[in-house]
Length: 166
Image (cartoon, rainbow, N blue to C red):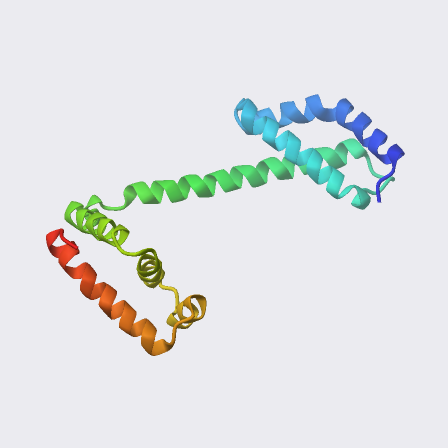
């Protein structure tokens, strides 16, 4: 439970330390002010959330600096992971992209768009890999009725996908 005195003390500490914490964060993020501001905000949010864990015999300045350093390091680690993932995506061989396959997929979705709303929903659920039991429950269909509908929809889609006419 927070009290008015607790809020006032926290505001005072924020005002006293925000500039120093911001400069510290700037150093971690190579002078990127947006990232430093985010880290500053995150630091004080964490300090507020975990304020009851602060031991009064310790220095509040040391405690808030430790939170700031950990916040910055965590953010840098997260950015490094994201950069690595992006790099791996770029390194994927371009042979995986098949323009013909892409056109077929676009044609298939254009054909699906021409179906009735119920059939469109049903086939999209199938394409999403939703289990038949879930589709049956969602649409109120029996197992046999679902399979017949899927078969008919596929039969209806085939000429459109292959030749462009539904």
